[in-house]
Image 1: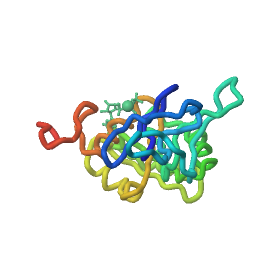
Image 2: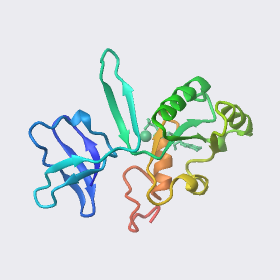
Image 3: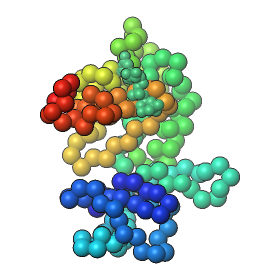
Image 4: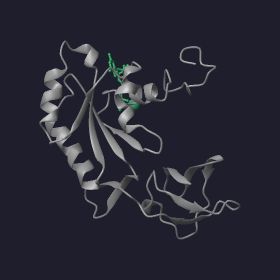
Length: 195
Ligand SMILES: Nc1nc2c(ncn2[C@@H]2O[C@H](COP(=O)(O)OP(=O)(O)OP(=O)(O)O)[C@@H](O)[C@H]2O)c(=O)[nH]1
Ligand SMILES: [Mg+2]
């Protein structure tokens, strides 16, 4: 199963039978687990047996603490989302790039709200100069063309995370990728707007 949520004393995982609340051995320290971890679970008791080795681990040092806070495990790609407006900040993008590079995860810069500027080219050029070989995509997160633009990183078996400041369009993009029209819609065929 794959860890989906991590709380102080409980964790849930996604499995072939849907979302499962794991039964944790008494000495389990949930801070050692991250969303995205693969774990072996007893199918009958749902007891956590052990965590499988991680391919990648995104983590951050917490202020004042010696330990590192685990953010996500086994990511293939980080979509670093920023928008073609005042949020655009190369120094901040460099910090996200350092986080991805340190974890061995492929970074892709996604410039949203390209529809709100006459030319996204200058943003794209400035971003591409931050790191050699860096993939930079500019798009309108509200339209289906965003799906096409991000297809190279969203194939079967790929795990992708979105990071970026508030308001840049992460949820909008996620909804577009999942063919949902809003946070509340589940992308079902019964949805009047997107179904
Ligand atoms: N025109 C246009 N509007 C966008 C685009 N992407 C996002 N928006 C709008 O920007 C606003 C903020 O988008 P969200 O998706 O909520 O941003 P977020 O990154 O999830 O923000 P937080 O959840 O606060 O971190 C919404 O009103 C979106 O409709 C885009 O590419 N073009
Ligand atoms: Mg959001």
